[in-house]
Length: 360
Image 1: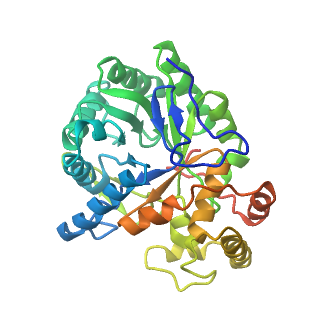
Image 2: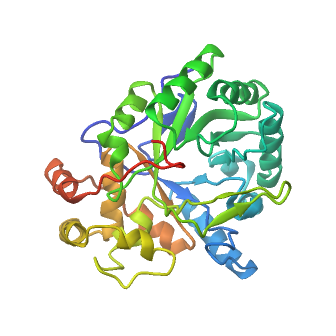
Image 3: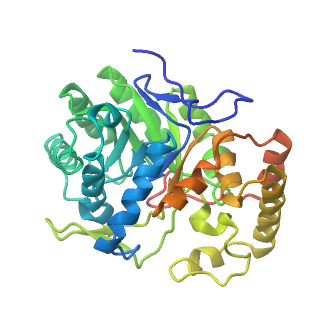
């Protein structure tokens, strides 16, 4: 097994060809496509007609050389996975082998019988995706009703069963990461990644030392940004258990870093509470810097925000409902913010905090 490559070296300009390597096994581009929108009715108001847009987004990512797709079993109650499975069928086996498919296990409180519940959920995901082995299988959050070591053994069983190439986690704190890392290490399985909420709107994973700690252990950081709120729930239709389904899925601060909204709105319904909690003076200064750098680098503000994530040593997840969204995300490549520009963005970035869902 080769060594993990979890971030770009200092000064390296990210391109579609500057690949990283999860756990020394799976080669990935420096940016990923978030597929939560595909099939989700509760938040994204998905309709069957929207599948055409999702397919075009999927195809555009492949065309641009960034075919790294991140989904989960709860996205659209499995519809996101099913769509990816349908989209893949149009490609040759050789092209399918170039795609990286990551999905996630949701730790419902009713799922206590490990490893059986995890292996069963994984096999269901593989069936929906139309693949025999996932490139990356992640635990969606550290809210599982059993100890981390029990979950680690189940993940190791999945690797040994040949169902996954690499395993990771999401929303884990540094202490939880270290426990998972040690438990997997005992089984001879590396921990490939930790997917955390990280953007200019929430820099806590860097401030707390979590990102560095993960890198020191050879663990890649996948960066997303999301909304938290009481109104968004996910119901497991098999058990009727209801759980928070809080993730708003892009590394662009829920869209506020795209330049589409001002520092004082008006903001979309569902995001008013989150945006309204931000200091408007600080946000105005941050957006001003993004606009200035947008002009300097001849890139959209969204590309500046995503490139900042890359320079910080993370792999940003860019949500993409359409092919144009993928194209916008791809503009984060082929340039690198200078240290001075990164420092100026840092000056006005927000720290954020932890929560029941976000431990890291």
